[in-house]
Image 1 (spheres, rainbow, N blue to C red):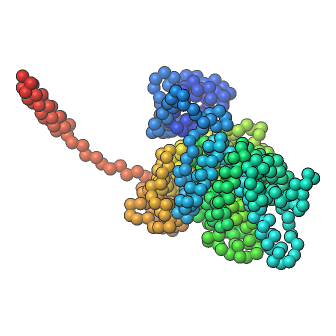
Image 2 (cartoon, rainbow, N blue to C red; image 1 turned 30 degrees about the vertical axis):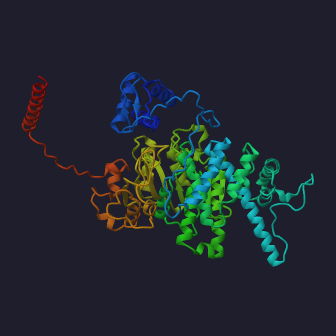
Image 3 (cartoon, rainbow, N blue to C red; image 1 turned 60 degrees about the horizontal axis):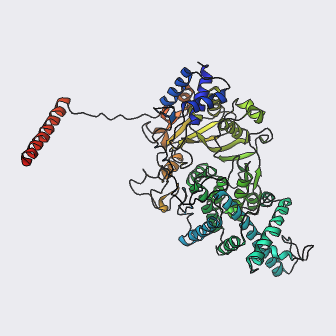
Length: 627
């Protein structure tokens, strides 16, 4: 058998291999993957022991029959796709696989505060359907093209505002986006403006202007010093036909974009299409979970926040909305407004498409120039910042393992591991200023993993910094595209300790069904951590978020006296240390086992004999009737 530490790592590796959709992974597939990971051969005995440990942890269940293997517990395997009927045609996505049908379901996390009117939703759905019928089935490509068009429209709006200001003040324009006059071929630059090219009349003329002039102009904007212009420098125009472009421009022009809240909600609704499409939903953390984490960390106007794996910028957007609601002075005070627009928000990602979408999300939510930039946060070049930020909100990717060579040496000195979730935790501690706080989503393995790296990281959080809370999330929160069990860690960087009591909360319901459909269990007015309508008696069982927020705010007084059988409770640091710094809630929660009284076996047998006599009597009566 491998050494104990290596065995623990292999167990964690095997857990990560379990398909989350209920399908199985065979013994041969398990062996091949683990041998690639460890670089050593795995014997039948070792494979059996690893599988037994994973099953004992409740992370998988065994599969009998040819090939054997494991699958996720309690999940029905996906149905086999039926073959298409003879003569039927299937629309294909860009990679040649069958594309999903367009959907218009409300994305998980939508609340009454953010939901669009039915008419606006229908308008967005019509735009989406136009792309679908026009031949673009990949939801990410649809959103990317819409992002470009929204940016072009926004540039025209900014130019119009500057023209009006110039006319009112009777002064020259301070900054022109579109040049005056014409280009070398005598074509007016004004044709590049949304308000001009949409009126060109002929579809072919608009298609030529947008493809040959507007998009090259966008790419040249990359030299401008703004997050949006920077991410447009590799803009690609992939709308295939003049007819589709004309239809999309007409539909998009009819969508009202004057109000900041409406603009933000429209783009959030579009982002929701990524999740409901099921293929790219991993880029999106449910909005209600983001709002809970923001409310629990209580951002201030002078914070400097970062999300090192920002994706579509869900966390920065939510912080901005929280500050507008709870600190309105952020927009009236000149100093705070300057910080809000140019210094408060930072986000990094190494997916340029996500950066474009995230930057547009920030723009449409009213942030002028956030720092949304390309960076591999775990690389040698990406992890050089230190002690810079006061707030971190993140849901980093749990991508398994990285090569030591590609990972920052500074992070490796903190925690010697290839696991991305542990490396991100080390990065968070490095990025925070002393006194800076963090709320981050981690897979459950971080809480109880038995490897040296897991234990050392948890010891660091508890002994060297201030670990405040652990919120255990329901395992279906990230369905339909991930079924992994996760938790939210809340901590403050001190470098001098400070942990006294750690607050635990067992969230069992987030307001949405925990299956792949993720349907709302309550009216939209009663969803989210701060619902518009108070929950009635019995509705807490469907939405734990408001209760979680209330109890969090009482963690230093009333929560200290709660029993371990309650939904939330506090655990002293000394007890956590005794348990090897295990942070899993089930390690400390006390379960009440109700005594069940069973009927005496002889009584049950007598009842069964009486039932059998009645059956026999009925059969005899039937026989008599048939004679």
